[in-house]
Amino acid sequence: MELAGLWVGFLISASTGKSLSLEDFRNMEEKVQDMMRALQGLTEDERKEVLSCLTECLSRDEQLQDLQQRVSDVLRSGELQIEGPAFLFISSLFNAAGIFVEVRAEAIWDVLDAMTELSEERQLVAEVLEKGTLPLLKNKVESILKQDWREQPQDVGCDPQARTLYALYVVVSTLLQLGEKPDTGCS
Image (cartoon, rainbow, N blue to C red; front, side, top):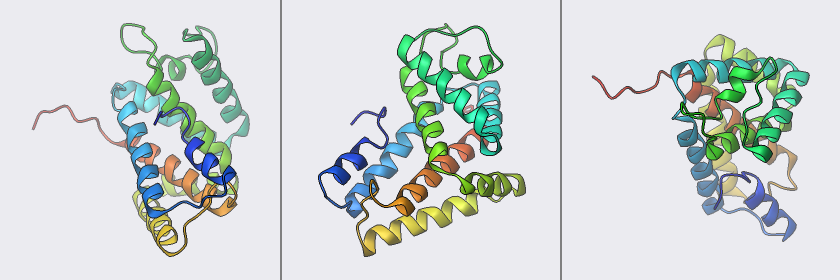
């Protein structure tokens, strides 16, 4: 299944009236892991820039909307937009040779999309990030998601709470990965 439509599988199941099973939860986890793998190719400077921009998006709706528009434009054109204050952020969608990395752009688009799903929760994430307790939040959200899916399969497309928890999981997982030091392979 493509990374491009992180929500697609869930929306399809919602439109067909099927509920999500524990297997669907595992698929969701795999999709988030695919996103994380797509972002592993970022340099340390790119990671810092993307983390900085995403962190700013937690408290500034206009920044989030602007980045979504810019990433959408790049996804459509595959070309680097040279102007604008988010140039370094947008340039992270390309490799060192200047070649568009679609899977990376799709992963970043999905994170921005998940952020739009959050409203008051974005402020909570910003506070938790500032306190340094993001791993605890991720563990809590993951635990709730697993428990909910075991007890009663969720129809994410129709259940606002399930959508919010899923979006929170995506955002927190991404912020955590971007905040980690890249593995250089040296001990």
